[in-house]
Amino acid sequence: MELTQQQYERIQNALPVQRGNVSLGNREVLNAILYVTEHGCKWRGLPKRFGNWHTIYTRMSRWSKSGVLDKVFERLQREQIVRIRIEAVSLDSTSIKVHPDGMGALKKTAPNPLANPEADGQPRFIWLPQMQERL
Image (cartoon, rainbow, N blue to C red; front, side, top):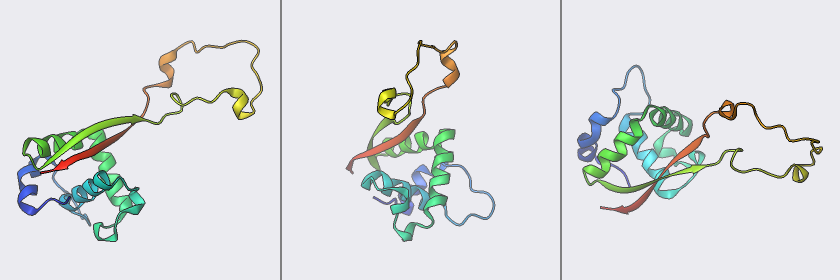
């Protein structure tokens, strides 16, 4: 799945304006993100034709944190360019616990609950869109 220039122009205003000297345009980065989404490959597994994987990952991460990717994928669905199901997967140590005996740790003598459970902060999520079908 790669966006044509005409499809990109329909969603272009959902993306931030590029500033400075950038090696990859927003369309190329978006096509690389769609490739990873469709094929489920690792970022390092991106074909060389998309450019440097780290540049693409960094921009995707920035867009995800600022809410740009949500707007883009919403616009892609509204314009009926692609159909996407978005899932959030939690891969945080707070949700995957191993018993202390399994790690070889010494046993604690008394339970010591946190005085402030919010001190750990919010669990971190990996934003993972999945393609349902091509239109």
